[in-house]
View 1 (tube, rainbow, N blue to C red):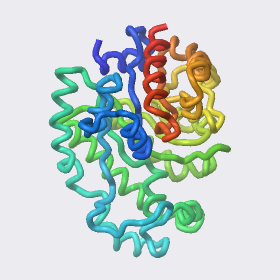
View 2 (view 1 turned 135 degrees about the vertical axis):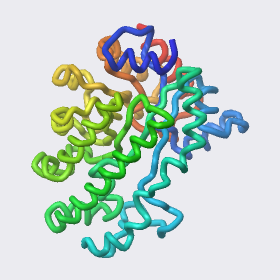
View 3 (view 1 turned 120 degrees about the vertical axis):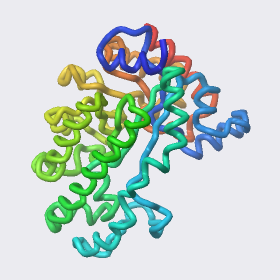
View 4 (view 1 turned 90 degrees about the horizontal axis):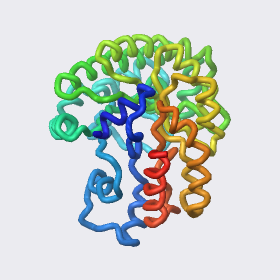
Length: 331
């Protein structure tokens, strides 16, 4: 079977030979630097080269950016582009965001992966900013959280613009390549739960996701939400809107895929494997896979690292992880 067939089978709660063996997010640069020192061949230049070398299945994430970074000043982590939380300040940067040519910029990747999807059965997904992530990126972390109360008009204006961008982008993207799912980046939880209340979610995000899901249903595309932290409380919010699944299910934040499956039997999940045990040896990794095994067997779950593999993980550790992942996916 192809990677794409396995993904579609698993996410339909069917019984293919095994789940796809993928990494939903590529490795930290420092992790790759370490692996180079430990023998990872230097001629493996792309992420796909490294994936193939390490025995992962063929897959590709295409991330379309909402900001033209060639036209704005680069900022530090957590900083925003707006001088003030006003529509007027937003209008000043509006020409440099939500670029009309964003699909054309990805055309080379799209052409290559359309062929791989059709001829090799590669799994391909599209990543776009979500309705929490996008305003935060423009406002900065702290200002964004105040803006739900201090600048509601601006928040809605940004998400109205983002929705129009996403709907148009999906249409144009699918004219060349239909992704197997679309992933929306949010990161709206931390290790104790969501950063906003359900009331704020319903006011500022739900209306836009509702219209988005209607469109993805027409296109036949699954919707997966990406959020770090403890997502347990907010999963029903998204399920009520028709969102299909969530990733990466961080264990260190207390997320338990077994408990989630009991409460949300139709939820699709990707991730879940505790990255913090990847350098603790075979026994620790086997224990972690045993924890996930009941859900692996049920379907609707693609086991993968619950975030990017940290640089504490050696190349030998990672090779063992991939070997064990394949073993447990066949159980």
